Image 1: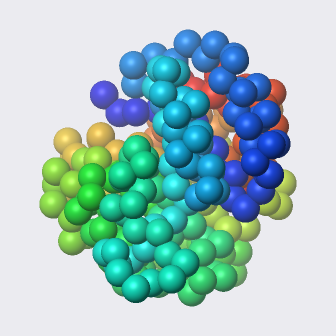
Image 2: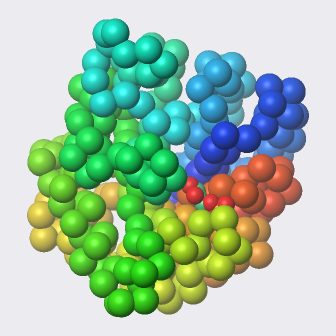
Image 3: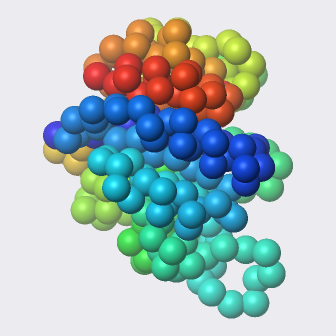
Length: 253
Ligand code: 13P
């Protein structure tokens, strides 16, 4: 059964003290997650191990990294490898967030390498895709996202593909307060699933959660998640507020 996921992306926010306070406030809430529902928190690197230990007793709750290196261990100062992440207990890694594509010039080809490092070390990529405003305005978003998926994921085996999580995050909706309508999200998610079906077959495509990201809030999550191909959200700003994120977790179908 396809997983439904509320994923927090804290980005480069929160001090150690405020991160702990936020996580404690969220964890003391009983989310009553069902077997196919997950809460995932992508936290800054220095907090990974401690946050992992904090969520160990909490059902269906996991910690993710926000990035990993494209290479294996070696002389790469400042990088963090998939193997290092795995060794501290991490299971999920956000890859290809639009902020990294823009500010760190991450290409679809580089992301192929990062995806490979994740699979080599037993990590699950939360693979981000999504178009800028200019592409949406010229109505080329389907093709744009299809190329992102093809160039970074189409080399995977069916077994690998069945494990990934995809996050569709239209860049024009990130941090802007301008959420895609649930109809726009559903249209793209259905397209993503059809692209995945064509390559990996219906059984595999039906296993892959496709999350929506871009100004998800407590007040719009239930409507977005009510769509058949929207399997939850990847949440930035609203994940920094315990009440908001609790509401988003509770909105999972
Ligand atoms: P916002 O929820 O702040 O729009 O950010 C979305 C995002 O980039 C999550 O990865």
